[in-house]
Image (cartoon, rainbow, N blue to C red):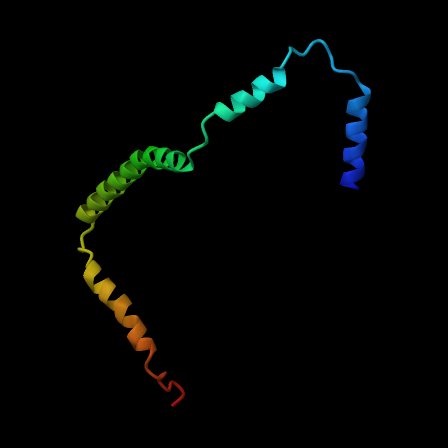
Length: 105
């Protein structure tokens, strides 16, 4: 579609119709003045409002997960040793840097 051609047709159709009396005098001037006086959107304020609204559910989820963690840790017969799991995970990278063992002996 040729946009220039479409624009010319729309302008020609608008010029062919006389202005209606249904539109109040200087209506477009008042609308333009109203648009100019409206405040610009503050995007930082919108983000801040959204983050503050999200803070309460995040805290609630954190508290629920903490309570669940404490409740399940007290009911398990074997105490979970998270520090040992963490150490094994960290040292796994060091073990991977070593040459592979020969399993085909």
